[in-house]
Image 1 (cartoon, rainbow, N blue to C red):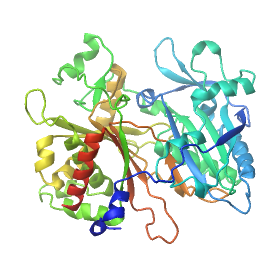
Image 2: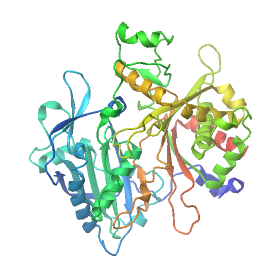
Image 3: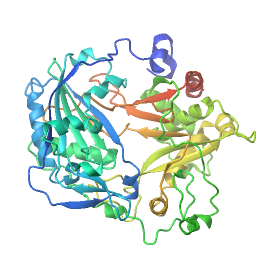
Length: 499
C-alpha cells in the first residue's frame, strides 16, 4: 500500500487502531523456574561498567516468536536446547550470570561476575499462535511471555535462595529467558535483560552466538567484555556543550569548571524522557511502507546544494524528521513562557562503534550508542521545508565524532544525568533480531514488550510474511499521547506524508 491508497479501512489501519481480535490474557501457566549456571567454572571478577552503561540500569524485555517445526514438534525440545545453550554461553558471557553491585569507594555500579546464575522459565499458553492476534501490534499481554527480574522471588523459592546475598539489594538476575509453548507447536522466547549488559547491537550478536551454540556450532563472534575501553579520560575533559544531557545531581564548583568555561547556562528543570507520565494516553501504531519512505526521500532531496554532500537522506533520517514535526506541533504548548516559538529537541541513538578512533572491537558486548539530538523552533518545523528537518537530523548524527563521544563520556564522569529532550526515538527497526537463524528456523517476528511512555517513540520492523513482497522494508511507529495531542498528531502525519 503506497501513499495514493490511503482510503477507508486502509487509512485506519495506517493510523494504528488496535485489532479487534487482540487478546488481553494469553492464559500462560508457568511450569518451572530455575537458575542456569555456567557450564564451566568462570573466574570470579568485578566488571567495570562505562558511563554509558551506568545510566541504563533498567530492564529491557523482548519476545521472539517461532512457528512449529518438524524437528521440534512441541517447543519442549527447543526449550531443552536453549537451556543447555544458555549454560554454555554463560562462560564467554560470564557477566550475565553475575549481579549488579555498587562500589562503596566510587559509588559506581559494577557487575560482580560470581556465577550466581541466569534465570530460566518454562511456561505454556492455552492458545495457538494464530489465535493471539497480530504479532506486529505491541500487545501489552506479551508481557506474560517474559519473566521480569522483579519476579525473582519465584526463583528464590525454587533455588533455596541462591540468587545472591540479601544485604546488597541488587540480587536479581541480570538475564532471564522464558520459553512459552503454544498449542500449535510454536513457541515464544521471551528475554528480560538489564540494559547495562547490552545495547541492541551487542544483543543481536549475543543472539547469533546463542543460536550458534544451539546448533552445536562455534560462536559466531567472540565477545569482547572489557568495558574499560570506554572509560573516561584522566582527567576528564568536556570539550563540547551538551544540551542533549540533563544533570540530575548537584556537583561541586570544581567539577563544574570545565563547562562553565564553555558558557553553559543554568539547569533545565524539565522532566527527562525516561519519566513515566500519569496522563491517560492513546496508543497507536503508524505504518509506513517502502513506497511511503521512498516518497519521503524524494521530498527531502530539495536540500540546498551547499549542504547536499554532507546530508544523508536515509530511511531513518526521513522517518525521524517526519515524526519530529508531528510530535513537536501536536503539543499543546506552541510558544514558550516569553511568547516565542517553543524549541523542540528530538533525541535518537547513534552507534559510535566505528566513529571512535580506534573503533570498538566487533564483539564489544557493552552499550556502544550515544544520544544525538536536533533542535528547532516549532515555527521553523511547521513553516520550513521538510528537507530542512531531515538536514538537522542528519547533522545531529554527523556531530557524533570521536572527540564528541569522548566529551559525552567525560561529562558522565563529572556529572550524573540522563538524556534531555522533548522526545526520544528508540529504534528496533534495523537490528535484525528476526534474521537470527536458530536450529528451528528464524523467528516469525521479534519485538519489544512496550509500555506507554508519552515522550518515547518506538520504531520497529514490519513482519516479513513470505511472498508478500515487503522484505521487511517498511516500519511501524509506536506513539502514545494524550487524546487531543494524538488527534493533532494523526492529522499532521497525514498532512506531512501526503504534502
